[in-house]
Amino acid sequence: MASAKPNFLTSFNQHYDTAGTRLDSCATCHNGEARNPYGKAYSGSGRNFAAIENLDSDGDGFTNLAEINALNFPGNPNDHPQTTPEIIPEPPVNVTEPPVNVTPEQSTTEVPISNTTPEQPTEAPGNTTEEQKSPGFEAIPVIVGLLAVACLKRRDLRK
Image 1: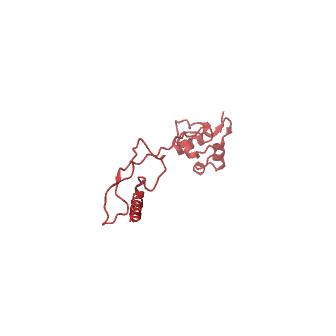
Image 2: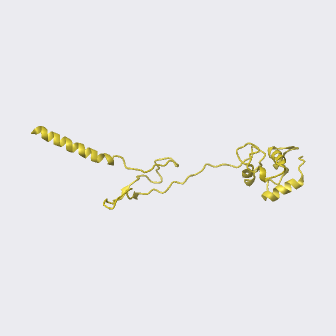
C-alpha cells in the first residue's frame, strides 16, 4: 500500500485534468510503498509538476508530460505511449511542367517529368531529387553532331 498524500494526487489531477483516469492513482508516483522515479523527481523538484514535465524520469525515451498526456505512468519505463511509424504522404505526380529558365524567345512546350504513377513510386518516400528528367534526351544533339562529322569525313575520303 502506497503512502501517498491525497492532496498530492489531487493536485496532480487538477494540474493535468486526470481525475477518473488510470493516472488517478497512487501508482503514478509510487511502486508499492516506495516512490518510483517520477515520484522521486516530483519530491526533488520541491513538488513542482511543471519543473519535471520535460524530464524523462523513468528513462523510456518519453518526457513525463508526453506520458501523462497519453495517460501512461511517467514513473514506469514499461508503460509509455504507443508509437507508430510516421507516414509521409507522397506529393501528387505532375505529368507535365513547363521548362525551367525559359526566356521569351524560347518555346514553352511542355516536357514530361515523370512516367510513374502513385501506385508505382520510383523512390522511397522522403527521398527527393531536384528535377526528374527523361534519360537520353541531352545526348541527341551530341549524336547528331557526331553523325554529321562522320558523314562529312566520309564524303571527304571519297573525293
